[in-house]
Amino acid sequence: ADLHAARRNHWNTWVATHAEMNPDAEALRYLGQTTTWRELHERSGRFADALARRGVGKGDRVMLITLNNPEFVEAVLGINEIGAIAVPVNFRLTPGELAYLVSDCSPKVVVTDAMLAPLVGAIRAQGEEPGQHIVIGGESGTPDQTTYADALAEEGEPHTPVDVAEDETALIMYTSGTTGRPKGAMLSYENLTAQSLTCIRVFRLFDEEGRALCAAPMFHIAALGSIAPSLQLGGVTVIHPLQAFDPAALLDTLEAEKITSIFLVPVQWQAVCAEQQARPRELVLRNISWGA
Image (cartoon, rainbow, N blue to C red):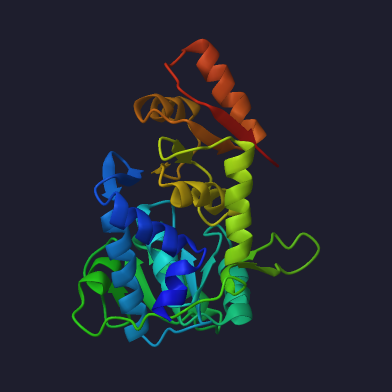
């Protein structure tokens, strides 16, 4: 299984390669803090261990209700490392809407930020059970939840490596449900690799020198789709915190972090271009993209 897994075209394989070849190079940046490739590989592996100890295995679902942060990336990698499926969902949904998604995909574990932790109680009040609760940030865990930091620090058996075929499901991404209930779109590792290669080709990305800003909400495919090329090539992903959109703050980040690539929606680009004309920053952008 190990031999096959090492050859699979998965983002975990890419991360493991960078951790071996460039362990101290930057992988993620968030609010001025760096996560190296070695740290990303090790932390996602420890999260996989914690999930396995909670009974999560191949094909099981783990729901993510979080803002933008490095732990989200670690968690997705850890979930996939044991062949489980990551299910990022929109934290702006109502408890009833979230409860429907829980009933649809039956997660074994739910991961939230501390500020979004009350949503788990609200889902349970709707009569649905989202599974064991892991909280990013906040105080030490309560009887019905564990903090993310405590989960990573746990003593216990490591997870058993599994070989996950490339046509298996890595993510379930829910559609907006325009004409009814949201549909769970199942994305395979092959889908994600194709997305990564498409971005690499279209944006003419060649090496690990790129610095991509992830400004889209991480529950949206625009975010994970833009992170995939950096994970494959070994470039840096700078994670922009989610808050009320501030074009000045975004431009300051583009300048300070020397960002070369970014995706925004058109209304954001209008605001960013207006702000840049009014108060120009020194930018090194190579490519910009949008969609809506």
